[in-house]
Image (cartoon, rainbow, N blue to C red):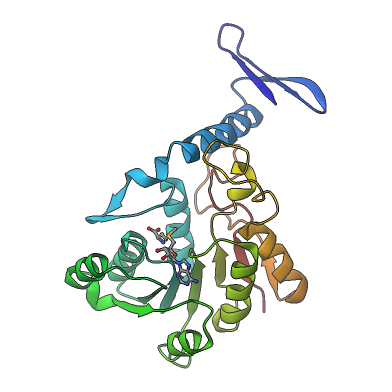
Length: 255
Ligand SMILES: C[S@@+](CC[C@H](N)C(=O)[O-])C[C@H]1O[C@@H](n2cnc3c(N)ncnc32)[C@H](O)[C@@H]1O
């Protein structure tokens, strides 16, 4: 695809397999096209590896954090489960939201919680709201251990951010979907792999092997879940699409 930004004439020209089309540069459609390319280039440049939250590295696109904040504030979960801890920044982010809401706690699962990361998470002022579980997120013993931390009646939201292969994410969806409360979500993050298989830092095969496909595989088996971008809590624009590393990520439990 060839994108030409003409700031003299306020046009965006798109040349692809479908032909050539021209958009007003200052339009919703042009913003979406440019954003999609910006996300790809930023992903390649490891833009998401440049942020921290309350002192801990957080490997996320900031826009995704604002959007998940909107969802968490709307759902008001008692328990947030996240697979994939890494340095702990996202756990700290979710725990901070719980602290501010005076509601909720966080369970983080990682196959390898490095000693320095565990030490920093356990020393953090938000650690009383965090439970760490070490092991593979799809190991039946680990799944049972995580579920053991959920009390009857708890409202639960789940985020999947560990191994992003289609098979692993599908197995995580199968393992954890039953704890998700109706109206809440299980979020299969990083479907951006579908768009980044062809960038220099990407991997051939990701065009098929990615979390968004796992989400689609899952909803065929479990129609009580629907893939939908949560409604924005505030919008005084004509825009409607998340700028995101998490396309097709939000699976809402309908009933
Ligand atoms: C993308 S990082 C998580 C980033 C973190 N959520 C954040 O926002 O900063 C992925 C993590 O998943 C963990 N992981 C990989 N395979 C796993 C598995 N089978 N079970 C649990 N964790 C796994 C890795 O050890 C790594 O720490």
